[in-house]
Image 1: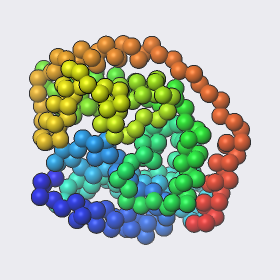
Image 2 (image 1 turned 30 degrees about the vertical axis):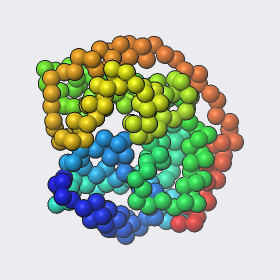
Image 3 (image 1 turned 90 degrees about the vertical axis):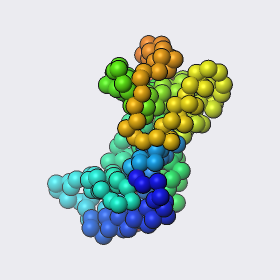
Image 4 (image 1 turned 45 degrees about the vertical axis):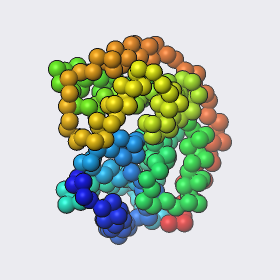
Length: 267
């Protein structure tokens, strides 16, 4: 994205695209937020716009013998204002994922960059999200994310700076869940402010963040020894951790069914 881009112009385009989606697919968008690096707090000048949304169909859609697609994928749009990536999940699909404590979905609920939000519906949705949060499931998700990104991107002679953050963020998310048993904040700076307020490692991470935010998405450097040492040690540690798995009461599932039914009938 060009540095001279006016964010208000981008927001206008995103709102136009969301309205076009509602009309084309005959759906109501309940929530639309920014995800990815912009939501995490370390976007570069040329970072794309990762818009994610939840939607509900008209009630007739839910009574078909053969269910339709439960995702809307628009493809990446090369726009003069920046690359747009806008995708959404149907409400019932999202609730199924919520029962599994899907971390990506829970992160959407935390995003502070909000384009659309049906307050009444989403306040109820958040209540269900809190009930179905499973620390162990989210913890293992972040462990896998950190391992995958480390193996794919950080064991090279030259590494992209943003890939360090794609390993560090899930590792600190693991630390948060281990310590507090709750979903970690989506913003990276909140994670490290709480878990790593000072020290040499924090200084190294702050320097990395400054380079990432000022540079481009493709900026590379030689491996950063101090960060690699921390990552390798922490990966070995978190792989051995087992967290308590709590039982979800049956009534919570029934309440979620009622929520789905009420929301669909309202559409």
